[in-house]
Length: 240
Image (cartoon, rainbow, N blue to C red):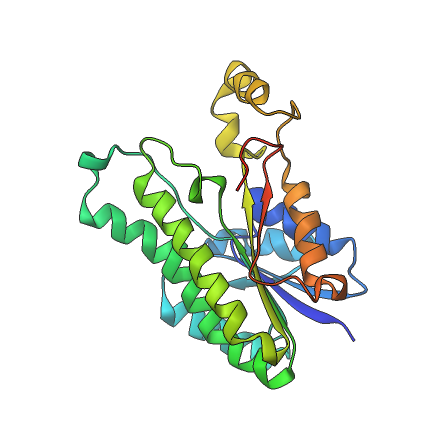
């Protein structure tokens, strides 16, 4: 039986890398790729995914996505909460609005999506919840206090969910990437990328496919006894 996997923020970067890794096992998965940019839905469909408009910052949008998926008989068995935002400001420059915006997408967005679909997972006695965290959840950096806090909150919530839903056949884990080859990293230029690479013990930067490969594993039956964990993918940059 094919499993339905829902990936938020799958239109670029890590999310697209995850979706592409699942696409390699398309005989096992129906891949639902979501984006909050309606203009990108056609591109996702062309690439072999079922595209769905979903803005994790809006409960109404999530409700509408659920109705669409129910009609298509594609309610997710596997959720990968990848959608997120980041910005950098020193602590005394951060406003309450800045904190609210980060948490509304990163933490509450993850919370909303899980709450919407976990009941159906419980009914089916199967579910995989994979939340994309960050190395910064445990490795503080100047200028990222609100972002670090949002990702640490996701990890803590994930551990509690793993305990509450273990008896329902549902596992819940986090993946915490370090530096990843995405558009954000491209902004640093070659010199900046080389500086980062030299700080990483394995002397290379992760790719979206690296995150995707671990996601596919955590979604599989082989990972049925892994729950409440945070998998670090950072080339040895940080241990915890």
